[in-house]
Length: 254
Image (cartoon, rainbow, N blue to C red; front, top):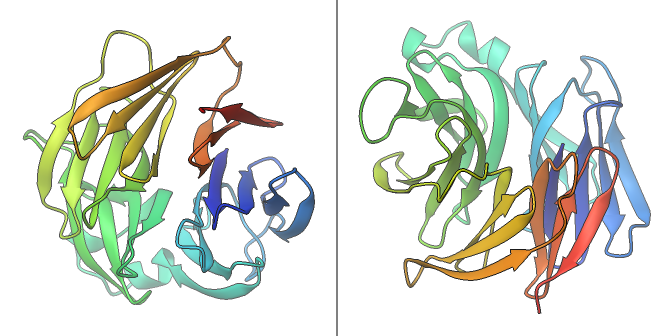
């Protein structure tokens, strides 16, 4: 359901059916795996989102187990932040449930999409506490209705895809709303990715690139509709990866 890349040489995929994370080579050879259904340290229960973009480790949003797992680049367990344990002593506004997205910035700060009372996103400090919650589910510019994907931006910030509105909402690393890119047309957005100052916006039969430095759409690619698209990642400047339920599709953008 989720795909991420590291160092332009490794591909990571999460599979909801067998509750595993797979590490692949750029040619699709399986190099290692992690998980299996369960509650244990080395088990997962609906790993909705992964992020390997820092090239050092792999973060996993373990949805049903209500925790974030941190693995090394070879998918060995390092640690986890269990929201169920944290919630026992947390103030009500910072109780976290249902993590369905995860991302890290170059500063090492970790961000999650989740249910946090009146908010839809949170920052984790040192895998030990919730620093801030943001992305209100009430009125206002920062409102998030149904956030499904978050990716880093180009200035210690992040972009969040709101599935319900189709908007791309920009927050800085303090969770402060910056700006919003409204969806173009009626074609639904399936997912987004970030690479080299560009947002890659995936539609069922179209890929649009938004140049963050110029603040404008820069390139368009059309392709036959791929059924069952769930996510996108960028391998290198010439290659993007489309994830479906059972396949990874390479697509050239040269």
